[in-house]
Image (cartoon, rainbow, N blue to C red; front, side):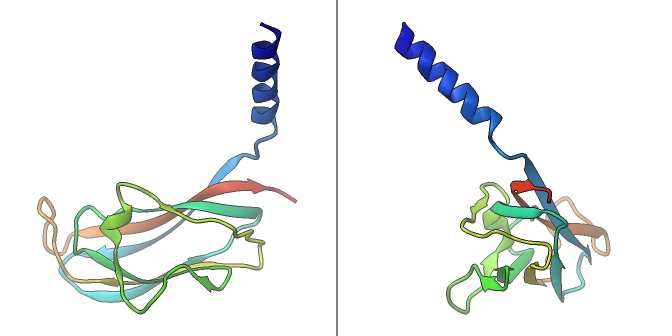
Length: 138
């Protein structure tokens, strides 16, 4: 009994010391049917530790990600591109980066010109990349 109470108490103390989670989102408005290259970048006003990346591509073949950088370090190995749809259902796990306000996140992307089923030619679509993780203010 005492052992389980002690474990419960330790878990509650751990929960109290967890830093709050934040989201850093960058976006670009696409015109469906008009292929283009674009870059997304941003910084924060807090000490941010990005742990997950979510891309909102509604279908395969819409957006290709050529490069993902955090604090000027590339998260991609090799010269290929990643289909953004691969990270729309499950999130890309990141780790090991502490991002200060002087640091930036950036993505270099290519919209292929593909119009997904259910969307119309010339319709505007906002593509976004959301980094989620712990953070703290100064």
